[in-house]
Amino acid sequence: ITQTYGLDKPIFVQKGDLVASLARNDLVRLKYKIQTAPGRPLHLRLLESDPSAVQVVEAVSSMHEKDALVEGALVLFPKSPQVIFNVFAVLQELPEGLQRQYTLANFTSPEVFTKIREKLQKAWDASGGDAKSGRNKLISTKVRVRVKGKFNQVDPNQANVQVLLASPDDIQ
Image (tube, rainbow, N blue to C red; front, side):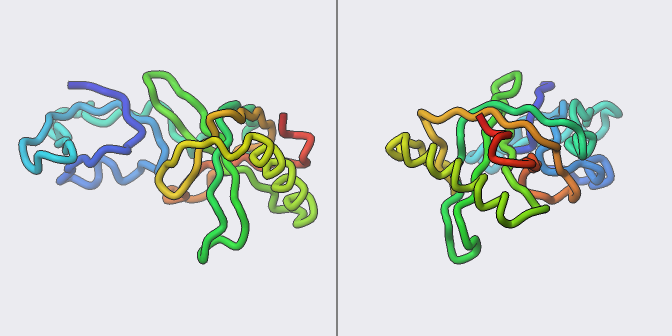
């Protein structure tokens, strides 16, 4: 079986060197078989004897510092003991039913970043909070955003690729 996944399924791999160069949110094409145990959740076993068992379709590291234009549902990571303010992202639909979310940020000016978050919060609040729950996040069912900026992906373990915005005007 060959399938493209964003590595969001448990995959058993004995030869770590086959996946050592992958980053979170890379899109890959895998050759695998379904393991019989454990039965749930579904676990896959990489066909490590096949030299083409892991093929990178899109490496998020290749996006770093490139122009970004992303559209999708607005995502809210609510303020928590670990995060001092609400964090927003955009959830982009990808081919084959995949999704990737991009955290929205500005690291050059705290004042601009505050204005960006205020604009996103205003849009969130205007929707009446109609959202579906995700793992540690809420996904708006009413608010779609289009953002332009620069992709930022500096660490292979980074939770999400970031879109660095220059101003609130980069959000529609």
